[in-house]
Amino acid sequence: MLRECVKCGFVNATASGTATEACPQCSAIYSKATVAHAQHHLAAEQLGRRASAPAQDPWLDRWLWGFAALGAGAGLIQLGYTMIAAISAPQHAAGTGMAVGMAVIPYCLARALTRRKPS
Image (cartoon, rainbow, N blue to C red; front, side, top):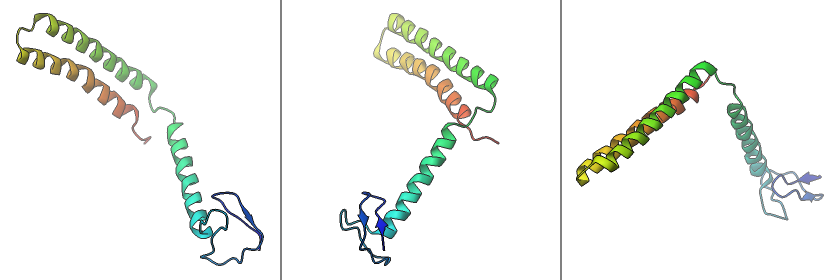
């Protein structure tokens, strides 16, 4: 029986066809390597399909990312103001935390809502 290993590509002309037979080149068990190979290709296909899925509502997506950009700008202004006006370390920490929150929260919201599954 002629059998090709899906892992290394070695063609075994003396294969017997048993379920526990291993490739003489790489020692992969044919039945397990075939299942793993199929699962890998199925997962890659599903990821490719998910990554190329069109956006549900381009207007909403643009609005959300615009909101995230405004949040980043507000966070930058807050950070600059904090660095200039804060007198103590607690004021620096509070102002920096507010600046990060202003930038990160809208970004996370936009990221989550634009990556939602199609309904």
